[in-house]
Image 1 (cartoon, one colour):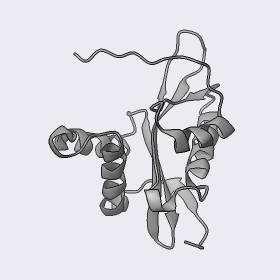
Image 2 (cartoon, rainbow, N blue to C red; image 1 turned 90 degrees about the vertical axis):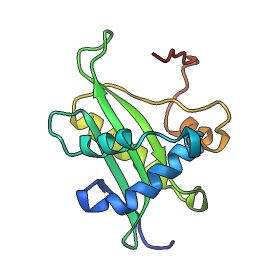
Image 3 (cartoon, rainbow, N blue to C red; image 1 turned 180 degrees about the vertical axis):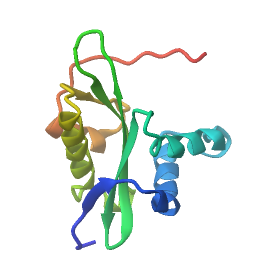
Image 4 (tube, helix red, strand yellow; image 1 turned 45 degrees about the vertical axis):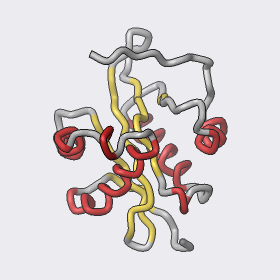
Length: 153
């Protein structure tokens, strides 16, 4: 891949190329086969990108007419800030394309969108074992030492 990478908002026509990236992202986190997301979740996620009332957004990275990465981000309120903050929820490039700056470009595009929305913070999480991702994240953000807990309902 020597063509320049363009990061842009997702468009409805992108679904056939977005879907394999989404499936790859979910497989990376163990959501495949018997543990795959329900199809209704994927469908709702896709639809939310195009609903004005939803605070859920998607950027895709494109090179040579092919999608080579995605990021999904969400704006929400905070009890410690006046303006919404931005949660960068998903970030993915195929393994064969990693290390080429695509993830960095996607993160920087989210930073731009968050700044335009008057957000004062962008944050995300990853697994402790995601060493390659953490190298990038250490260069574009700051780890504050928090540990994430959750409880499924």
